Length: 266
Image (cartoon, rainbow, N blue to C red):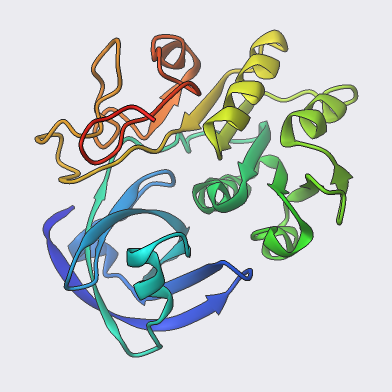
């Protein structure tokens, strides 16, 4: 892990959807450390710095997948191959990737598919049978489905508007799958309202799971306290972003509210 930005050159940019791009860059695992799926990096554009989930991990390369939702992400989307960015990290408590020969369900909503893609690929390499629910509002925003299929995942597409795959929400798709499938473990990332519904379904089915949360982060070191959640005071950048079922129960604000840069609830 590095606490100073490592300047890297963008070697490839993939237009994944109309709003999401993947940025790939070289990463010396021996010198800089090998991230675990579910961890994140701080991305510096020489003006500002924001946290981004790692979406792909290979022997000598990392990738982040970024949705264009504001000034910072728009600036990233305007970069080209050969441009440079600063990368600090990796940080956080990632997913448990120690499973072998298990039946796994991974569920991602929108750009929440970024860390889900990383853990799904890792677990497939280790001989697990991995089903993935790839959910989005519409067909054009489905992320990583094709590449996951080629990698060996059993992909179940789900769109709110029914433009591709299962018509409905990820919760509906999961309930449908559980009529015929049994899973040993689950991994979830997406909008918290979606994750809350998934959480309830998995709890009823007695399927243990891990959930990747997102909060406003400034330091990524657990010092500033900006990303603390209520009740236990856990820092998303240190104790999270990934939490197990029993810890989700203790986070009172889960799927209820978040805080902006000044700490105001919204």
